[in-house]
Length: 441
Image (cartoon, rainbow, N blue to C red; front, side, top):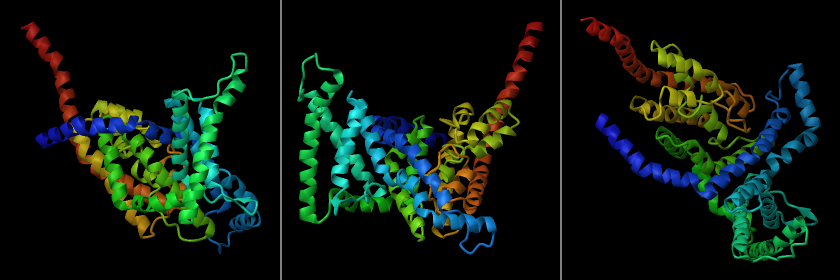
């Protein structure tokens, strides 16, 4: 076992860690991740509005309060949907600006200017005008991949012109704001002269605009992202990287966020239409079933540590249980420690994978309600899971089952580690006495 562990750690350190480090620092990955983080507050608030628009009551309920709420929602549906439509409903606008602004920092460009340039480029190809009306079909999840590509294209084009000094320069006497406006003229013109003709050409040849063509291309990837193998692979990568000391969740979420948001948008549209919720693997699934207490689902481990006979583990458990309730588990990961601890490698990797499998089948069979809202990742798991599923109760049961599974799997490895520490504590306690006896002799 020790030899196998050493070989595995050698592979991780020599091959996986350098590759993960390169991916994690890649400018497009970090820009996409930061762009989503910038858009996150708007999307969380928009998702929260769904709770009020679609209250968790059966249509045939006889409870007076529930009947009044449902009727109020029906009578004022258009007004209540407005905050949602201008947050989650236009998520691609926030993402487009956020990704471009983040990427601009890698090129030492003005983030605001880059964000506005990206927004113009996105609207140019994703908001066709017909009968004096702008289509907003691609402002939600359907246009998310277009927003990412346009943000990268427009910012890189802007950086190209800046690197080669292709700009309109005005005399030093001209105010800075005016000079900056003229500097961006050529990139704006270049974006218009490239994206707009390209969009018209694709529409004439394929009968679809760029966002529609992009969605057709990535449709197999989006479908594949909502499968059990995709979940297990993403969890495995995250856990192995974290065990090696690399923040694997940042890498995985940076890659998966576009797929999660596209699927979440479809789920929300299905709920608004009163149809079956189609997708399982969205961010709420990741946060509230696989990361209970943080990466590795370590909140149950913290509860075990609190009752440990070893002073060190008991202290770490007491320190880590409160942050763990809010999915912050660095005190447990580095204090116990779990990271780079061979005794905890197996449960640290397998616990979230087994919970992922259990939760997947429970949702797939219709036993547990599916995610329709975006929640803060710091929300305690049972509360967050219920909130994400429009306050259904079944996700709470699923979270408790996942916690029970984690306790069962962590327990034997925790006891083995505790036994080691107790032996060490006993040895440390007896060492001074032995020294004292030898000195007396």
